[in-house]
Structure formats: C-alpha cells, structure tokens
Length: 167
Image 1 (cartoon, helix red, strand yellow):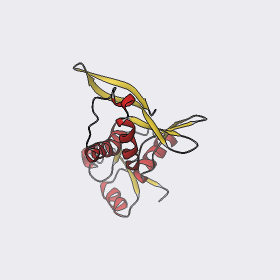
Image 2 (cartoon, one colour):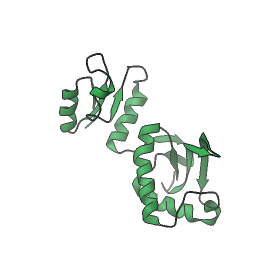
Image 3 (cartoon, one colour):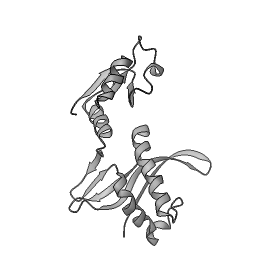
Image 4 (cartoon, rainbow, N blue to C red):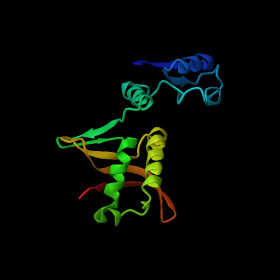
C-alpha cells in the first residue's frame, strides 16, 4: 500500500494493478509509446525528467484518494476538494452574495453534486490544477474555493483565476 511501481512492461503493470498496487507506466522503445500502456495504469510518463518526490507524492495521493494540500496559512488550508465537500460547496454557492457572481450553478442539488463530483475526479488528475477548497484551519470547515481553471470567456479560451468565500 505504501509503494508505487514504475515499469515499462505492460504485463507487469497489469499484474501489479490486479494486485492492488499503485503504478506508473514508463514509455520506452520496447513498448512503442503510450498506446502500449494505455488502459493498464492511470499514469504514464515519457521520461524521468520531473519524476521527483513531489510528483510521486501527488500520484500516490491521487491514487489513494487523499486530497493534495496546495497551500497553508496560519488560518487557512487550501486543498483539493473531495466528494463529501460538494453539498457544503453548493450551500455556499446558493448564498446571494456568492450566487450573483456565478453563472454555472443550478438549483438542483443532485445535479450540482454530480457535476462537482465529476470535476473533482477528473480535473485534478488531468490538468493538475483546478478550483480547490478553502478550509478554516481550526474547524476544517469548507469556507469557499479558489484556483485556476480553463474556461471560454467571450469566445476565447482563457485560464481563469477565481475565488469565492462564504459570508
């Protein structure tokens, strides 16, 4: 449970994943690129460049379902959100002072929960960034979100910086 296998052999990776091990596929001249490893593990790398403790820790946390801490201050923790945060985030988004600035929040809590859960599951892994939860350090209560996200603004693809904080 506390290790990650990095291998270039598809059969070894499949066997390791089948045993419940965390794995990273490594592309080399023998496995003919990412296509040779697609579907057998969630992470695939092309070189050792960038494979450091921070990267391994990020992969380990994501594969183990542990939200990554992005930043900490004396009073706040900014970290990836988890599915259990979604109902509280929806409550925050329904506050008049917050909702006035959001264009993509609906009234159907179940639909919003599904949308945010899918975002949490996909965006962090794919982009390695997104909107993160802002938590009060003393209570661990979600008080908002902040971060960056790809968005289309006035017909142009942009990277948007945004935040919202409860009243």
